[in-house]
Image (cartoon, rainbow, N blue to C red):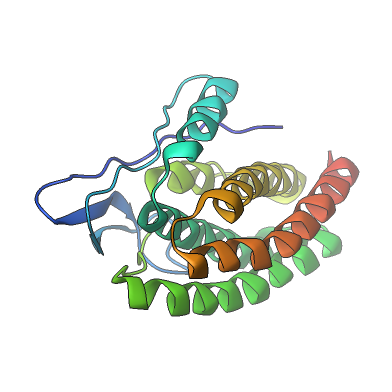
Length: 210
């Protein structure tokens, strides 16, 4: 099951562009608290596009943006996705009714916290500052979980994990082939097996809780 989502836009003035995470929640554990956090990158960049209409249209829009996605935007989007995995994982550890869902959520926290550190090691030399808040494309997915509980939360969370990992895999597969910077390409290639494993597990658990 795919979820609908929106996406941020990025200004491209002069040699330094600021990718703004718009009005989004704060760091891990604060889903729903609004802050605005800019992430500065060198060079002009264009953020992936999306909308809040039909889920298929939104996913197609995101996928269509991938071939032209610049390395800094990839790094920012990957950082935002990690925040999604960590924050919703923390929420699921608290709210999920299924022990298997809770176990998966803890794994998301652990794995994506480590992935964030690895991502920072790639991004810092490229003058890309990791976002401290989610982009709207990911925030919209997190928001869908706030008012659910029990079995409905389990279903909604695992649906979100399926969608998030489908998006990640498409993005990382593209950058593993097309990234301009060799360290970015290597990071994307290295991370793909973990994302594919998460996607397989998410689908299996989602089928059980549906």
